[in-house]
Length: 191
Image 1 (cartoon, rainbow, N blue to C red):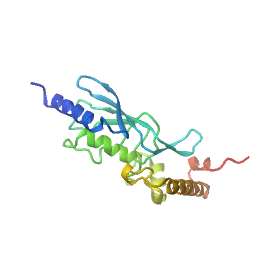
Image 2: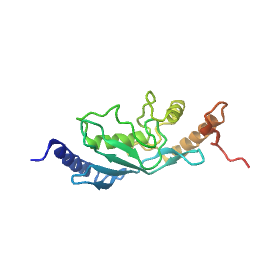
Image 3: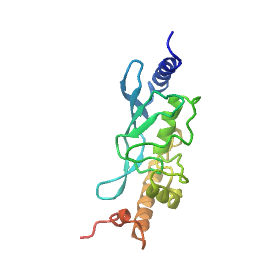
Image 4: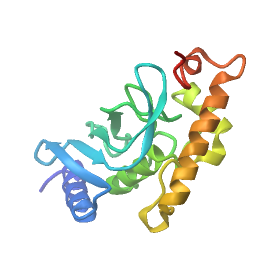
């Protein structure tokens, strides 16, 4: 008889496959192990990232790697983004899941929750991994979420107005005196 951990890993695999099999927003794009202990997910969800030039830009696709360590499920899965994300609860090496992970939480629910976080439908600015993103989110709360669930998508005309307002406020924020250095490079290019 398999150990409780192996049974949990098998159940996670079955649940993920069933829940994400026909869902275009989140796809399983890689697995390692039998049963899988490492997963790669591709999110087709709009989020933000900081370009090499320092601009905060939108990205429509994000890749996440999830490692289910030997301590799983008592310990939270180790999650890290393979594509850059500008978010209070993400940094280059990890995603903060400790605030809400419990051994009773299902892995598929966690993966969906991380998608909501990428889209700024959920975020925590009180204990951030990325303080700059937390400050930006607190100052631009009216621009959030970046992406909305498909059932409540805005009309394309409203989306265009929303994005224009997002860029206008982003530029105003960046040109204020005393803005962090990363923001000094944002805004229209001067000739």
